[in-house]
Length: 169
Image 1 (cartoon, rainbow, N blue to C red):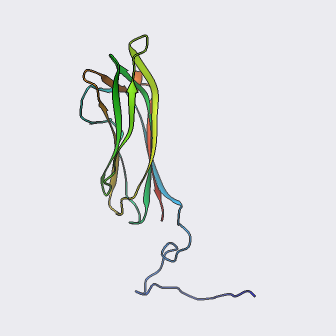
Image 2: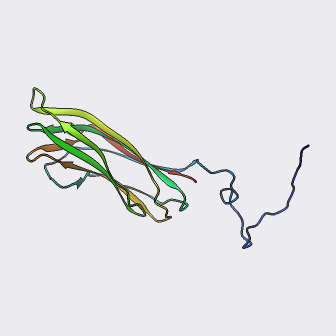
Image 3: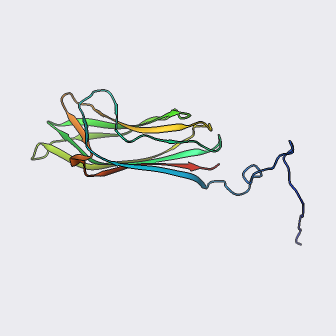
């Protein structure tokens, strides 16, 4: 047996126009918006505190408090100079996001030319900011060994990327 429901208008209890999402149909689990940036350039640090990676900041405003933000990044051209050591990268969110994750902790060792080129680091994280306010994400780096210089964008000609995707709930 097949049933058909026909109506002229559907309204919310407050008399407004409902959305597909508020009715529990469509939009759920789909990508609402995508924002991406890429940058090229060389930046180095010997700092023992995290420093922002230039041009790696990106902002998005979720359309719903139930939306999640999928953050992906790829950092190219990583190297360190000097003796063996450690370096780290961190993804930080601000505004509506309180995300702060150390995304990779690299052991950096010396090659025959006294420089290590480890190529790239990538990561993916799902944030739940629970807001419709602006959320800003950025990447940071730190040298974890005294006197070790960590560099991204080796030779200034390798692209790195940061992408934000709103996942509708």
